[in-house]
Each structure stands twice: as C-alpha cells, then as structure tokens.
Length: 239
Image (tube, rainbow, N blue to C red; front, side, top):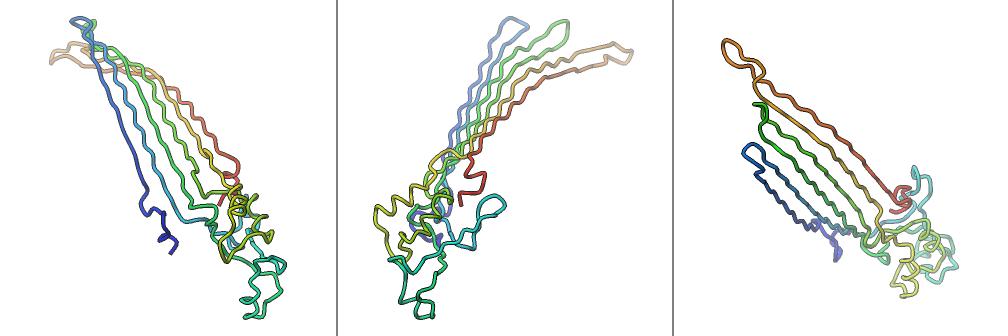
C-alpha cells in the first residue's frame, strides 16, 4: 500500500489564524460611525505517494498521449535474467513504475480572505438610517512543493535507457529526473467585491388604528474575479 510509505500524510496538515476588529464612534446624539475588519488565513498541506507512470496512464489533453515506458535490451539496466525466465530476453519490456526519485507529491493550498466595512447610522427626519461601504478580497494559491513534474520532459528520459528501474540511481541521474519537477504556483486566483448599501425605516403614514411602518433599502455591488492556471497542469501534462 503506497499510503504506508514514510512521509505520506493520511490526514492533511492545516494551519489557520483569524483576526477581527470593530470600532464605533459616537458623532453626536443622533449619529454613530462604525468600522469593522477581519482577516483569515488558512494553509492546507498534502503529501501523497509518488506518481505512477506506465502505458496504463495516458496524459495530455483528453489523454491523447501514451504514457508508456519501455526499457530496451541495449540499456545497462535491462533485466536479462528475469526476462529470460519468461522467454522475453532481448525484447523491449514495458515498465510500470512510481517516480520515487522525483519525490513524494506534496502541495500547499493557501487561502486568504479580508474585508472591511465602514458606515454611519442614526436618525434624521424621524427615520432611522444606516449606510455603509465595504470591500472584500479572497485569494487562493496552490503551490507544488515537490514530486509533481512535467511528463513531457520526464518521459523521454525514462525511455532513454539511462534509468535503473530495479535499483537505486546515481545522484546525477536523480538530478536529471528532478529537472522535470514543477515547483511553482499552479493556481493563483483572486476575487474582489466592493460596494455600498443604505437602508432606512420609519413611519410613512398615520392611520386611525395606528402608524404604517415602512422600510426601504438598496445596494450596489461590483465583483472582479481573476484566475491564473499554469499551462502544464491545465494541459494535464503533470501527473
């Protein structure tokens, strides 16, 4: 079971902190100003087993490219003795492998959210009023820390005969494999919203049986999403 490998997290790590503040200011007997702000930060880290690569796992847009790995008889790491037991010695052999040399697949998702509200509320013309303006911003970043790679770069190396699939590789060979790793932000999204609202309530008419209350309100809102996805991940080139 690959989940039993050292370093694999069965439960994601999580760090979070929050801050909140609010202030009110009495302007006069009828009016009060207020402001409130909050900030939240959350980091979730995951570590799973290395990627499996073989002809079973095509890649690319719509899985249109074969993920096959083949070791040729000319490779110094060709398993002649094992192949001979099955009458296959001297023939190209398909390989199913996990990319331990590239590292465990680890990533960190960071979510941040901040907002501020400020306004005034009070009484005027025998009506209660409350008006405010606000700004909100949320941001999400997904960062690949280790173990994820661009298979367009790694696959030719795995098929070159330079990789020992049956024992440890040299540091120089591992460095060539890890050159395909993607250590970058692959998702960077931001959403902003800002606007204003006002509401009021009071007596609109006096009737024989009592007053007729009325409440009115309105708001305006603008939202601006911004998303950035890196090519290799979007194009499914990173298993």
